[in-house]
Length: 155
Ligand SMILES: [Zn+2]
Image (cartoon, rainbow, N blue to C red; front, side, top):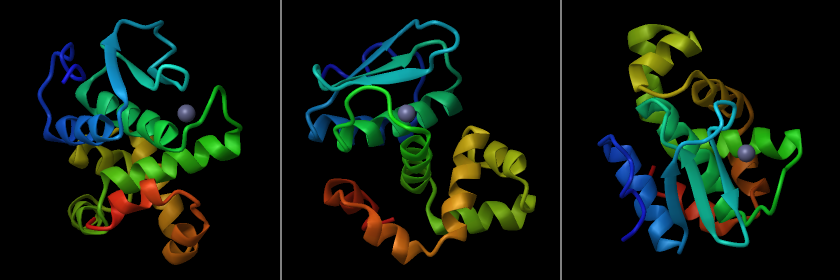
């Protein structure tokens, strides 16, 4: 498989996300990007590009975010509302309720501390906290994409 060949880090979460991408026919490219750009999804090529200059935590967060775009077949820039939803879905993909509860017991409720404990970017934890405040079942019911939801089934 071609995805993951150029990343300079090893992380089980990356392998897992790359496995989902591979199964869905999405190519992942790691390469240097502008400093303000962490990654993007190109619908016409069905490919995710991730900056090769990110920390492991940011690579995991970026790949999850772009994977959600890809699984929703988002084409081009999305609204802030959609981006916020993508962040929440990415957070659900990356953090199980059990993992979150364990981290919160250990570190308290601060997003930054939990992010360090889970080795994830702070935005992922903030998005997790945002989605947890809403009713989880409403959240799941309003997601129109069974392809995305099936990945949550065993989480
Ligand atoms: Zn996005």
